[in-house]
Length: 219
Image (cartoon, rainbow, N blue to C red):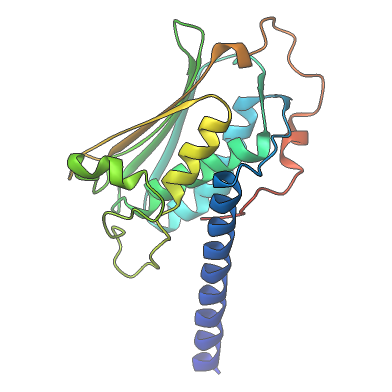
């Protein structure tokens, strides 16, 4: 029965959304309580970014969005907790998808700055955030606008705060630039002392960084 199938789909969506909320609240609580221990190792940040992009591509495509990337060649191995870095990217790209309109563009870039720091940028041309409310958007539960598609399920307002907190656990800095109608640009800068100084990247398989389950599988 088509109607029952539709009901089951709604129930599944609601259950998944509830699980996402629980996971995000638990993640934020652990970080605020100082109970997150980093499981750090050297890994290929370029491969990790591409893995997340492949995972998010179907979500972007179903929303009528273009997801592109620009990664510097031969990025040095990065010393961090790959689970948390993966979650940072999922949160930021997921937010960009949620707040972008059909035919919008989302771009993910990664490069080493002239100072030797690792810089990762996620930018979109979506609805944007009022410049006066950027600080509020970075606070837990600080949701300052509605998704571009009003029919989507609202999030918890924890995506950006979690990304910021996870970045800071790695001694990094998250910078948010946005304004209404001008899109959003999130720049993450990790200190250069987390990058391997020689060209010999980690000997482990690039897939090893993804074999561990992230704190939350989706937004």
